[in-house]
Image (spheres, helix red, strand yellow):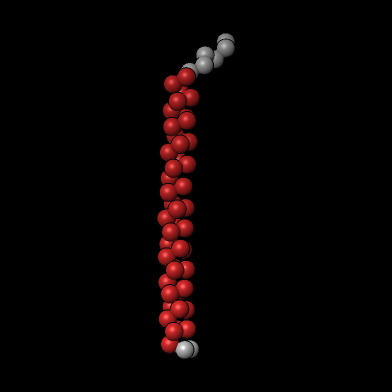
Length: 54
């Protein structure tokens, strides 16, 4: 017996993959943003130190 192709299942699977991808992409951008903020703070502190003559 040949299994019938179900387009609905394909749509659900595609949606699931998309949601998982979005979740991981969102998590990555949040981590990236936090890292960027840290680097910015470090750069500002370095500039302050240079201005004070350390």
